Length: 67
Image (cartoon, rainbow, N blue to C red; front, side, top):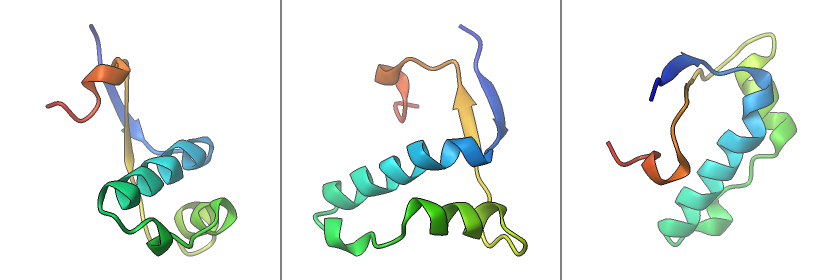
């Protein structure tokens, strides 16, 4: 299987935010995530980005985070 690593794009924000929310639930702090999708989009892809990320494509769901 071929895996591609690429810079995050604006259309990745919904899935990235869902991962953040899932992590917060795992850490027993779901209320700690107050950022909205629009805020996260602006913070990463607006005029003054404050974060950047990478996306791995080509992984099966069962493989995500297993390496």
